[in-house]
Image (tube, rainbow, N blue to C red):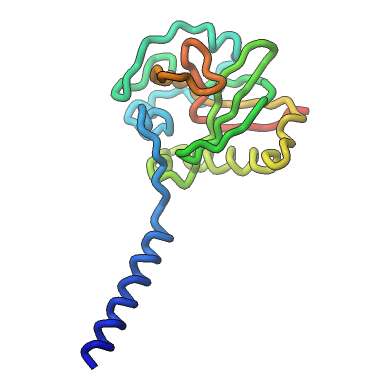
Length: 188
């Protein structure tokens, strides 16, 4: 009888562990300046979100940017949301589950990232609903390369990435990205 009770207890415990792993939020895997990337850092409240500044990829990749480390707090140029128009050359789902968009306007190329709204750190952001809406809006066009057939309007917050040994595809010399994307919509 003791043996049966022990087996039942082990069975119940294994189910409980299994359920907790299934229901636990995913680990995002993001490391460098992650709170800055998902607007959960203390300085995110100082970002000017209303009336995003109209810009271009060409202007953004021409900005002078400092070298940053994983501990660098939000920079001045990361405190103004901006709005650009572009095409999207490619989309990759990164290890951190963000959508890595390689965006283009003429010969100017850079990266924009749509945050995974299931990321625990992103869920701490006051902008979690914007992340969800942007992700859902883009998902309608992601399959079968449908996104390549459109020009896009993207609203996001500039972000300076750390130097990588091999820069990510689409990364300009100044390492600027739009991370996070707050709004994305096709304009044609």
